[in-house]
Length: 72
Image 1 (cartoon, helix red, strand yellow):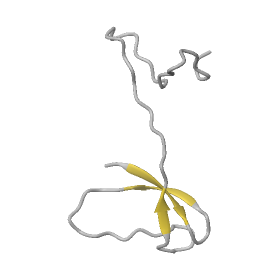
Image 2 (cartoon, rainbow, N blue to C red):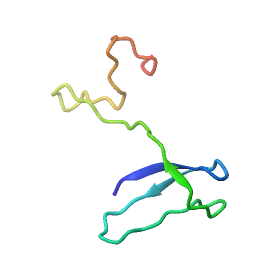
Image 3 (cartoon, rainbow, N blue to C red):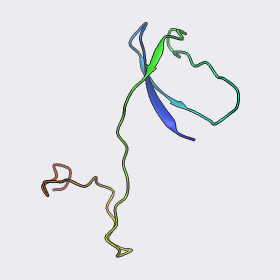
């Protein structure tokens, strides 16, 4: 089940929801104020990248410039 990030348009509270796949229409609400006026935010995610060697996987995102601020 995916986890989505939301922001309440009423109180500004940011929160995450685990969203299941059902045939029922489920209405979500802000856990802080109870408002149903919420908006899903666009968030990033991480992936594991491997070069084919099972011992050389990396949990850092790839950087198109070749210089990554995450790798020191």
